[in-house]
Structures are given as C-alpha cells and as structure tokens.
Length: 467
Image (cartoon, rainbow, N blue to C red):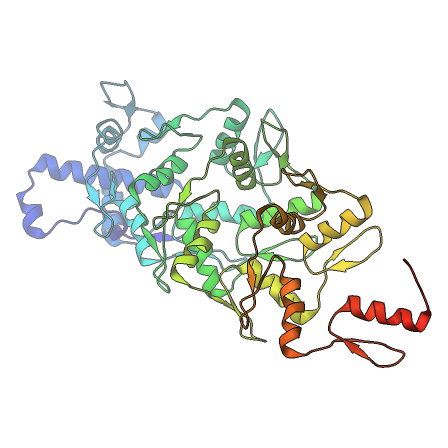
C-alpha cells in the first residue's frame, strides 16, 4: 500500500495564520487531520511523516483509538441524528448537509468539500498518475480507480443483478444497470427536461447547453465535453488500439467500439425501435434510425440553413461552402470532400469489385450498380413517369425520358450551338465536326460515324433484307 505523508491531506497554514487561530480552532483542525489519518490507516496506508506519528501516538495516549473497539460515539449530529466517535468527524460530516466547499481548483474553478478531493482532482490538469498497474503498466490518478482496474485482469465480478444474473466488477455499475430494468431516470436536466439514469451523464449533457468543453488535447487543441472522449481522441495521435477482439484479432481504440464489433460475431441486436420493431446492434444507430420516423434533422448549416440527420453529413456539406477537399488520391491526385466518395474512387485503381450478383456472379465496384443490375433478373421497374405512365428500371432513365415531355435539351455543341436532349446524341453529333468514324466493317474495312450506318452497310455483305 502507498505511503502517506502529512502534506498529502493537511490544510496549509502559514505560521502567522496559525498564531491567529484560537485554541478551539486549532483543536478542531487537529481533530479533522487525525480523523483523516485514522481513516487512511484503517484501509491499509502507511504513516511515514514523523509529525503524523507524533500526533498519532498522542491521540493513542488520550484514548481515542479505544472508541473503535467500544463503539462509543459521543458526538451527535442534531439535525439528522447521526453519531460520530470524534468531534472532527462530525465537523467533516456536516459539510454533506451544508454543501460547503472550501477548496477550489484554480484552473477550472471546481470546488470541493475536502482538501484530499481537490488534490486528486488536480491530477486531471497535471496528468499526474501516481498509481500504476503491475500487470499491464497502465497508470491512474486515483488509488480506487487502480483497484477497480485490477478486476479487468482478475475478471472478478462480485456484484450480480438479481433480475437477469449479469455480473459487474463495481457496485456503482450494478446500481446503474438495475435502472435499465425499472426504467428509473432520477437525474433531470432543468433546461430541456431530458432525464438520465446517472448523475455523471446529466453533468456531461448540461455541457450541450453551456457549450463547455473543459478537456483540451495538448497536441491539436481540439476540446471535448467529456474526459473519456479526450482519452479516446488522444489515441488518434498515438495510434494506440488497446482493445482486441478475441475472435478475429481486430483491434480498437475504444472499449465501446470493441463491444459494438463483437456483436458482428454474435449477431446480437439489443436496441429495438418501438415504432417499427427494427433492431440495431448499438444505441447510437437506433437513435439515428428513429429520426426516419420523426423527420428530425437537428444539425443545421449556419450559412445556408440546410438541415441534416447526422453531424457527419453537416460537416461534409460545409465543404461545399469552403471548397475544402481533404481526401486526395495518391495515385492520380484527384481530391474529394467526402470520405465515402474517396473510398469508391480508389476502386478505379485497384479494380476491386466487392458487390457480386448472387444469380449470375457478375461483380460491381458500387452497390448502386449492383442494385440496378439485379433488376435485369427480376424485371423490376420501380420508376414511373407521372405524365405518360411509362416505367423504367433506373432513375436516370426516367429523368432522360421526361425530356420528351418538357422539350429540354441541356447538351449543347460548343462548335455550332446545336442542342440535344441526351449526352449520347451530342457525342454522336460532334463526329460531324471531327470526322471521327469509330465503327468499322470487319469484312471490307469501311468506317462509319454511326453504328446504325455500319449495320445498314453490313447487309450488303450478308444480303439480308429485313423490311
């Protein structure tokens, strides 16, 4: 067990300040300190400071330890009737009711009732981690966090849910889990009325309203509302992926990503939509799906007002305003605003065709092309013209057809200005200017500008007279 020194928990006084205290205040201070040390020694800490040892022995001579054996508790809290063995314990306990927090953190302003809590909190800012796991080397800022971590190695899960039998390493996690059975959400946001099963989640949620992001990355200055988000983000710089799937060996930067991945092996889909019954492997995907029913699009572009279901869609959309294209192909130099477009483009170079028709085994680079192809087998024509009722297997075929009704001719020749309803018609027309004749007879070698002209010519060799 780690050794404790007097400086670890005492309240600092200068000699001048100490001289100003009256005897009762000094006595109270000593009581509070001794009570702290009795608590620390009770859980196995060593006392190394000579000053502590002197106070400790002095206290022992005055008979204080005997109260732990006799059960005597002469100091009673009048309002709630709780009794304590030592006057200092009573004074410390009263802070629970009064809410007094004497110790404030300079960097972030957070206040604490006890100096030792402030000292532990400060390690968040200094990144000081005094407690190291001897099995994996992982370090922690708090001793109790190390103790909890050790259970991940021992797989000890002493706390079991009496409803579903699920076991947990920590009692507070069991308590939080039990609320999933009863649906209890005791912590409510006073701004939007959203409720949470844990106070920690409410505290993080409130930062949505305040915009507070107290945890900043010291490498890229990106800020986060939650410390765990900062820790996971830090791995994008280090490349660390400490969570490994024991079935396929795939590694992940966060435990939640590993948990979601494992469901691809088990097929588990615990999150179900209460409107259509569709099930999902993770809660985030369910929340996104629910927007299909509500029509909610919470992410709005502050330049054009367009709204989106997903924050990632808004982020990509904003590039249409900025012109940013951060994804560059290292083979041809082409750039893309959207990562999915970039991934699809790469298949041009690799020749990868991951989408295969299960009827004829023909393969395609894009899923949309596979879907179109499958309609050649099924005969499905889902796109109908609302003017003449003609149906088509592809959306773009319907769009082209509609030009026969509107008279639209969007393709114009840059040489003579003649316009055409179809891109293919413009391409054929341009041959009248270039003289290109791509269609050649394989019997006599004569060339033609149009495929239809080649077909007519071939009949002079075959003697075919179809009309």
